[in-house]
Amino acid sequence: MAASELCFKSVAELAPLLKARKLSPVDLTRAFLDRIEAVNPKVNAFITITGEQALQQARKVERDIAAGRYRGPLHGVPYAPKDLFATKGIRTTNGSKATANWIPDHESTVTARLNHAGAILIGKLNLLEFAMGSGQSGLIGPARNPWDLNYSPSGSSSGSGAALAAGMVPLAMGSDTGGSIRGPAKSCGIVGLKPTYGRVSRFGVTTLSWTLDHAGPMARTVADVACMLQAIAGADPQDRTAAPSPISDYTKALSGNVKGVRIGVPTEYFFEHVHAETETALRRALSLLKDQGAVLVDVKVRNAALCGGASSIILGSESAAYHEKRLKEHGDLLEPLVRERLEVATFNSAVDYIKALRLRTILMEEMQRVFQTCDVLMLPAGNAAPKLDAEIVGTDAPSDPPSTPRPDSFNIANLTGIPAIVLPCGFTAGPPSLPLGIQFCAKPFDEATLFRVGHAYQSATDWHTHKPRLDA
Amino acid sequence: MTVSRRRLLQSLALTGGTAVAAPESAVTLDVLRNVSAAHGTNLTDDRLRVVKPVLEHNLPQLRELRAFEIDDAIAPTQGILDH
Image 1: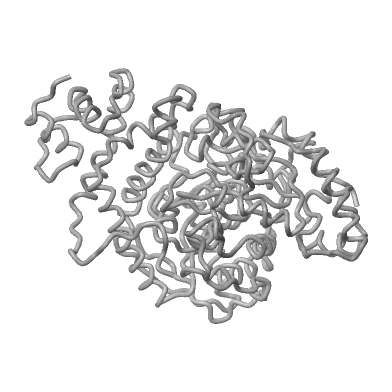
Image 2: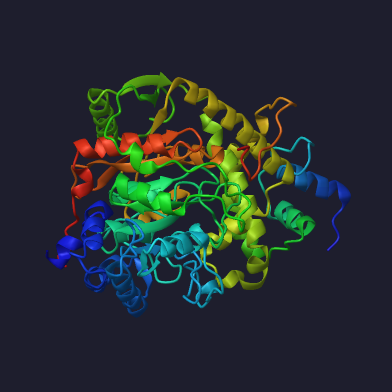
C-alpha cells in the first residue's frame, strides 16, 4: 500500500494490519512523518514534531506486538494532541510566547492513557493561544484549512482539525470550551467529540474555564473517535471533576442501527442565520437517518438565547482568574486579543458570574426535559469555514457572514455538560468547496447513542472519505 | 488616587457591581478607571482605551442577562456535575 494511502486509513482499517504484523508500526509512523514534512509547511498544523522519539516508540511497539503483547486497536497508531496537553519532557507551548519554552514535568492523564494503550505520540498541534486567541499571531501563526489554505480550520483546536483533514495524523486530541473541538471538526470535515463534562480527565490540560472546559477526541470517523474515548474515559484521582460513572463498551454502539432512535430537531432559534446551503445539508442528513428508521421529533429549547451571555461571563471570569498573575506580569507576551479578552473579563462582577451559574442550572434542567422527548438533539454546527484573515474569535469581519451564526448551538453543550459530536454532512458548492458539519447532542454520559447515530450516518454516506487536494 | 464613595458606587453600578440602578450614560474612561482601581487591576489608560469599546459592545447582552429573573430556589451549578 502506498504511504499516501496509509495516511488516510482509519484505525479500524489499520489496527488489524498492525495486529497481524502485515503493517509495521515503524513504516506507519514513517509514512505520517513524511506526510507531515511534505504538507506541514502549507498547513502549519504542528508546533512540535517528535520524529525520533516517535520512531523509537514505534520500534518498541513492533517488538511488543511480535512478542504477543498486543494492547488493542490503538497499539502502534500515531496520534497528536493539541499543544495544551502537558507531555512530560516535551515542550508544551499553549500556542503562546508566554509559555513557548515550557517543558512539563508531568504528563496529562489523557496522553498517559493513550500512551498506555500503545498509541504513538508524533507531535504537538497548533491552536489558538491558550485556547482563546485569534490565531493571527500567537506562537507560530495560524493553522490553515487543508480544503483551501486561505480559509481557517476554525479553533481553538485548529491544528488538530487541520492535521486530521490533511492526513498528517489519524488521531488527535482537542479541547472544547465553547466549540473548540466541534468548530474545527465542522470546518475541516472530520469528527470531533466534546464528551460529557467529567467523562475525560482534564489533568494536565491548561485551563481556560474550569466550568466549561472539556477534553475530547478527534479523528476522521465516528468509529475511531469511539475507540479513542474508550481508551481515555474514566475517573482520575488527579482530577476531582472526572466522573466515576461507568464507561460503556462504545464498540457495541457501532451497530449501524438507528431504528426507533428519536432525533430532536429544534423548531426555532437555532436555525436563524444558517445559510440555505447548510440547512439543506442538515435536512438531507436528517432525512437519511429517518430513512434508516430514526424518528424525527420537533423540540423547543427554552431560554437557549441566554447561553451565549452566560457562557461568556463564566469563561471570561474563570480565564481571567486563571491568568491573573500572567496578565499582570507578562501581559505584553500575550497575543493582543487574548490580553484584551482577559482585561475585559476583569470587569465582570461576582453577581453576574453567580447569575450565569444559576442560568446554568436552569439550562441543565431544560436539557433534562428535552431529553425526555428525544434520544439525541440535532443542532447546526455553523456555516462553512471563514476566511483566515476574517477569523477573529468573537467578532467576524463585517464582510463575511458569521461562521457560527448561533454560538449557543455550541455553548449550550459546554454550559450544560451534555456530550456533543460533529461529523461531516456535505460540502458547499463553492468555489471553494468547503466541508459542512452536523451536530448531535445527547444526555449526560450517553456518548454511546451519539456514536450509534453518527456511525449509522457514516455507514450510509462517504463525506468522511473525501480528501483535500494538497498536491503533496 | 482618591475616589469619592459616591463616584465609586456609580462606577460599579454601571458595570453591574451593585444592585443600584445604573445611569444610562456611556461607559467612560473615568468610570473604567475607578472600577479598575476598585478591583485592584489598575489598568493603564492605554489598556482601558482597548477595553472600553469591547465592554460597550458586550453591555446589551449583559443587560439582557441581568434582566432575566430567576426563582429564589435556583442555586448555581459550578464545576462538578451532580453525577
